Amino acid sequence: MPHTLHDYIYSDRPVLGLHITSFTNATIVTLSWPHVVGGGLGIKEIISAWSKALRTDGDLPALLGAREDVLDGIGTDIDNPPPYSLEPSQIKGWRFVKLALRLLWNVVRRPEVQSRTLCLPGHFVSRLKEAALRELDDAHQGDETIFISENDVMEAWASRFVAQVRGGQRSALVVTSLDIRSRVNALWDTGGVYVQNTAVCVYTSVDCEMLLSRPLGELSHVFRQSIQASATDEQIRAQLRIFRTLGHKKRIPLYGNPDSHLMSFSNWTKFDLFNAAEFSPAILSTSSTDSGAPVKPVYMHCQALGENRLLRDCFHITGKDLDGNYWITAFLYPEDWTRLEEYMVQTCQHLGRRKMSGDFSPAESPKATVHITTKYHK
Image 1: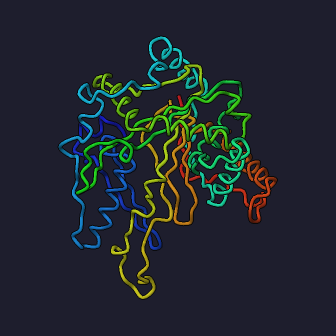
Image 2: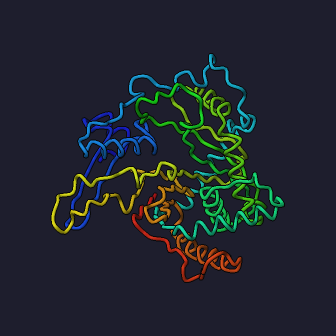
Image 3: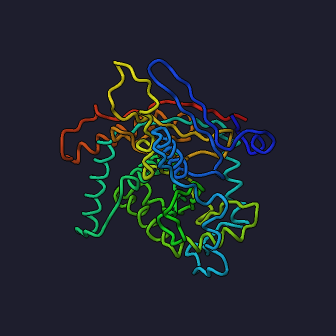
């Protein structure tokens, strides 16, 4: 399986890899691809088209954007977008050197990072959101225009955990991936699907007091406000304009305070990958298995291949499974995982004290579920 760009360039390996392992009672399907092929939404479209092909009904969507990039004119001089609101705070020059040296020192000082997957039960997340909304309602005196999503709450909850275990009084710079397909006004063709990667970043600066001391609902609202401000058509075009000026060796720019603690999030929940796959036509009919029910995945795991020692304090939310549970892969220090379980229990106890609707007890606390552990050493 390819792990680096070198593996793709100097071999005959295809850019999209498929490996299937069959057991008597389960099947593991592995897809591998570089990000130049597509992002989360692109893979969702591939899986969905694959499921349609299994039904042999011939109703397959056309592949768009393979020869012409629909975003070619976005963010160019002809497009003439407005200034990017965060451009004055771009981390470059000596400010970037300062941030890079701190990251490298962390790698030297703490080279070992573990990647594990945890499951957050749906009832846990929904009650966490309910508590956050009550806190917002108290702070904004019943303003009905205030909105936060479950994703905002999970991002706030996880970033607060990182801030607590790292200690100190530093602010945070949280970088969140965002797909722009439904947010930018481009000449999207509705006669097919786009697989290409169409993601940008949302940069959220959070001060120490908000991160550690303010109610979780207010912190969640900070992330929501950041998306609302940065994910407009004009601001996306402005961000792409800056990205185009970086030349061929593009490095994703950062915006904020170089002294901040860097965290990153990506979230594929909106893509609904668990419902994109429907493999019932591939099931061999037997008297015991031919029920006619849809065949959908019970678990999905997303993991970056190869080593990246800078990858730490990162969270990837693969999505919500068919039972409503969220699956999250994170890169943290080894001792953080025990602390994360304790943090979950503390959250459950807090929710219980809030007297949420329905019965709730700390015994229902979600547990960190280990699926794959990856260690990076010197």
